[in-house]
Image (cartoon, rainbow, N blue to C red):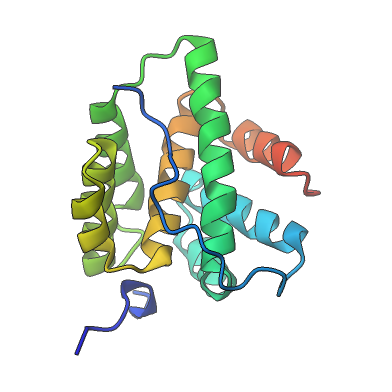
Length: 175
């Protein structure tokens, strides 16, 4: 018997996001797209603000539509990766691994923090099979990876409030 998915754990050379995370949305059409976009931005905001209470509030709606959230976070990660390249900020794979690990530190239960950090490290090196092993197929691990990545890379280019505001504009959701 497989252990429970990690997201159900009680609370307590170029870097970019690609399409290696699960992409089949089992929840498609069950929630308005704006709510999915808003939840994705809220996940990034919780990490950018290092606000554990906000993260705890946003995880349940994110988990209800994890595949759609992952898809939206991929869009945000791609946007932020391009912004970093356009601004000339130096951002290497090692920077993303360290930044994601630092971003999730103390925000998640230890076993989920380890899964997210380790899966992101494998992902950033192109080791998708290894990353998949650490996620155990749980799309919320991908959601945490991508949200933490967006927060980390976004803060390399924007101030905290500016990052969240920009992501809301890009996602077409109101403040």
